[in-house]
Amino acid sequence: MADLAIERHEDKYEDGSLRLVTFTLQGERTGPHLEYWPNGNPRCVGIYFKGERVSEWKSWFSDGRVARVKTYQPGNPE
Image (tube, rainbow, N blue to C red; front, side):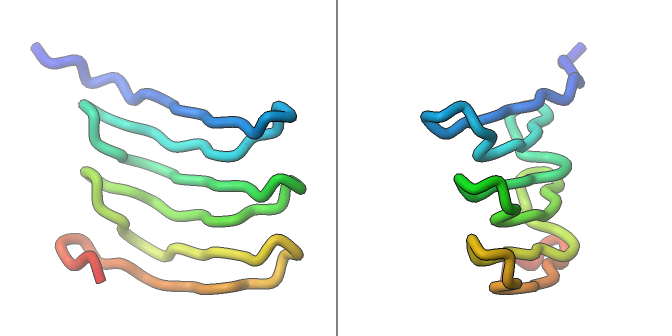
C-alpha cells in the first residue's frame, strides 16, 4: 500500500525566519502554500491540489500592499 502521509516542508532564511511552508502528498504539492518576506510579512498564499494551483492565490509586496489576486481552476493552470 502506498504511503498516504502528507509531508510538511519548510525553508528558512539565513537568519532562521520562515521563508516557505508547503505540503506534499506522494511527491506532489497538495494543500496550503505559504511564502513570507524576510520581514515576516506574507509574500504569497494559495492552495495546491495534486501539483496544480487551485482556488484564490494572493501575493503581497514586502510592505504589505496586495500585489496580485488570481483564482485558479482545477485543470486550467492559467
